Length: 125
Image 1: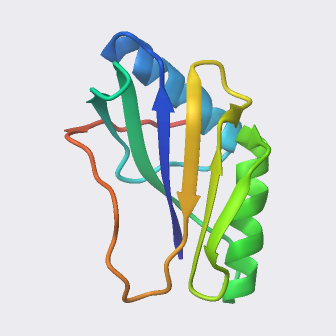
Image 2: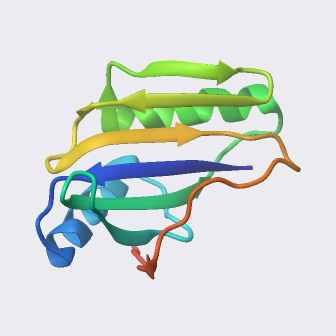
């Protein structure tokens, strides 16, 4: 099972945004899959959606794992959605300098993916 993430940054250049994304993933402690980096015209910053694999064997394990991962990178999470099939978390209290907001969500298998960016960027630890 994978968690979907989106993070927003107030970075003013692509290079700065990539640095923010690298710090975020380092703090998250999991490799990212399909990470993209794209300008976000609404704020003049950047956004980077990505996926992380979750640990566990059952749905409840995945929900706890994504919440625990979220706590590594932000605090004061607002939880929404249906915990049984589409929970979401949102925070503007990032622990990573340059990240202004971050969101995660889970979807039960078979639901359509949300998100996606324009320019592909690969980050490795």
